[in-house]
Amino acid sequence: MRKLIMPALGAIVLLAGVWSLDGTTPDVDPVISGSIPRDTGPAAGKAFAVANIETKADCVLTRGERMTHHSMRMAASDACEEVWSGLSHASTWTEAGDGTVIVTDAAGDAILTLAETDGLYEVIDPSGAIITLRAAE
Image 1 (tube, rainbow, N blue to C red):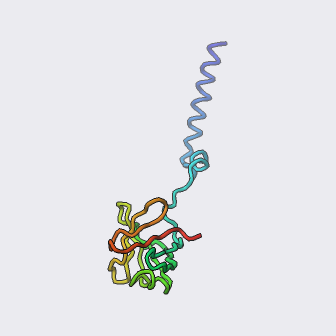
Image 2 (cartoon, helix red, strand yellow):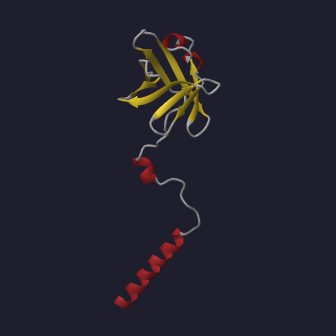
């Protein structure tokens, strides 16, 4: 009996292995997909409330669609000119790769350089600007 069981089990394992090699790979691994949230990176269309601490002026900046791996379009409300000179002309949000973000105008000139701290962005250049950006709700 033992001589029949072992070859039968071997044949079953072999057939199961051949059957699993049907040439197609699953599109999604349900265990990993169900347990790990998808990292989408910074969301396009995300709005930021911008505030100048000294002048108490505020406005809204909105990131648009992704242009490159590091850059996204940006739109600024007219009120942003009161927050910081030139900020109403912001057109690009560029992630520098070192944790900083550069907000530039259409000509590519930097308006503000930001660093993420404690869940919001603070201006690090120009050094005299006391401006914060936080995700708008």
